[in-house]
Amino acid sequence: MKKIQFVLALLFIISSCQKKSDYSKLTYNQKANELIQQVLINESCNCVMEISDMTMIKTSMAENPRFDIRKEIVKKLHLRNKEQLDTLENISKSFILDTVFLKHKNIKIIKRDSITISNIIKDHSRELIKKCPNGVLSFTKPILHEEGRIALVDAKVAFFSCLSSPLKIYIYRNEKWVCDKN
Image (cartoon, rainbow, N blue to C red; front, side, top):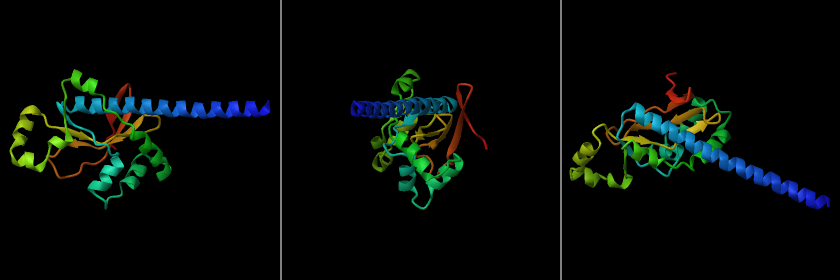
């Protein structure tokens, strides 16, 4: 009888952990989409670059291997250590962009594979400028901390600048994401 109770208690603990994990991914996705939506509205942007499958950290390491983005994120988010960052990064892997919002606001998604050097040379950039007169914003998958109250995102104008932009911290206040100027 005690073995059955032990097995049932173990199963309950395992299933509770799984539900909490699923909930945190749903909460992350909701908060990350709210952040991206707020930035798009603030920037009056009508086009967004398709978000890469890679996380912010993997994207940065591919673009600039000399820059220690992990150290920078730990510092900016006041994390305890890089293991805590690993946990937050793993949650960000599940990000799915809310395309319903984008369609409702008439914001176009520009496919990554549609922007190639040969297309730019063939003057497809004029088509893009006509399609997206306010520019195209590019985002990495946001990293959220403190149960979705603090976020870090790399948001920049896509392919019109070779300069990297500083990572921006956003704080969720009064039902709105606000860029932290500090």
